[in-house]
Length: 304
Image (spheres, rainbow, N blue to C red):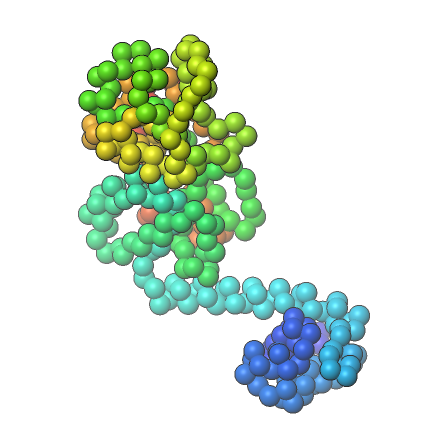
């Protein structure tokens, strides 16, 4: 088997092929253009064929260069990710979890006292974000994601729990809600965080399910699930809320669900991490704790 060329020469080629410029590649790698050109020339001699066509003020890849560039780029990307992942594990003893802001503040955060009491040696870091974070770049150990299930070969996926949508309000407001149509007398709050669904649950659909005909229906809309619940917690109206986000308020009695009419959602909560990371001790510890917490959750009424 032929000996591979030096990584330095391959790195010079990858940068030059990406920039299509020897000077720009040299600047990125903090070497002189002459030094970079020398590395690429050595690589071409090692291969026995040219990789670049040298033009007046530019370069172009030869067919050999075009064939080599994608695989070399992918290999350096894999090396970078592997190094960053292992370096993160060595230098950082913390366990970093990401989840959506609403789930983090309303479901996860209220439970963390139990986790800390059981595992005082673990320094848990939370990164609340609606964006899909990069596990390696952002130093994420585990993600709790809410959405329609889909799998990827790169990631480990594990079911955590499902969710529902139902009307919630303050106990004193609920005293005036004797029948479903009484909701029409108060401010109705809508959570738009489920707008990614083809048919997100709506107040109109809830009234239909309750057997109440409605025409004009005015609602106050929030694009964050926890903001909708926060407004109701302040005693203003009723929100058609996700059970997971409203659960802490329902558990403490700060909120109530006046009627047993609800929707089961298609999206679910899943645990996600890079393949292979699921078997690490801290990941196993946190996964097991999450599943234990889910067993504490009461179901909303009796599922239909």
